[in-house]
Length: 312
Image (cartoon, rainbow, N blue to C red; front, top):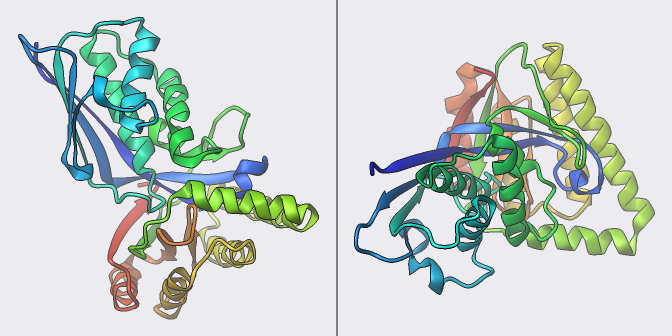
C-alpha cells in the first residue's frame, strides 16, 4: 500500500478573538506559507499505530499515549468515526512549519492533517464537515473552551466570517491585501488567556459584555469593508480592536512593542492576533512596504516574520 499524505495550512485571526467565544463574530484567514503534514505508511508485520513527530519530540505507540494527548485523540476519534477497532499496522509521521502556541492554528492543522491522512489510509476519506467536527473535539484539549474558528478555517482553507453555533460563511475578498505577521517568540497557550478572560468576565460581566460587543461591531465593519473592497478601512479597525484587547488584559509589552513598531514603519494598522499574552501580531501594509515592516518588527524583537497575501 502506498504512503498516504495530507496537509493543512496555518491560520490567522484578523478580528474578533476572545469575543468570538461569547457569541460575537470573528474573521480569520488561512496562512498557506506554513503548514502541518501527516504521512502514513503501512508496516507489514508490525502491530498498531506508531507515531513519529520529531518537532514535538514524540515517538510512541498509540496504545502508550494518554487519553488527553492531542495527537492520540485525533487518531482515536478517527478510528471511532470509521468503526475501526484494530487498524492495520502503520507508522504516522507528523511534521509542521507552524510555530507552536503562537496563534497560527498549529494544533488544529496537525489534527486536520492526521484525520485526513488516517481516514484516507483506511480507505474512507472523511468529508470536510466531519473532519471539522472531529478537529473541534481535539481543540478542546488545546483551548478549554474553543470558539471553533481554528478548526473551521484550517479545515476549509478559506477566509471565514464565523459566529459560534451558526453556519459557516465564507468571505469574498474583492481586492487582495497584504499582512505581515510578527512572532513575539513567547509561547502562550490559548487556554490560559481564554480562562483568564472568562474569570474577568464573571467578575465584571457588564464591562466585558461591552468589550465583546465593541469587538463584534469592529469585526462586522471589517467584513463589510473586505467584501466591498474598502481595504483602507481595515487599518484603523485593527488599531481599534487592539485597543479593546489591551483593555481586556490579553496583550503584553512584547506585543504592544511590535504593534507600535509596525505602525511607525508605515503599517496602516496593527493588532495582536489570537489568544494574546505572546504569540503573534499582524500588520496591514501595502505590498511594497512589507519587507520594510518585517525588518522593523525583527529590529523590535520579533523572532520571525511571515508576509502573506490574503485573497490572492
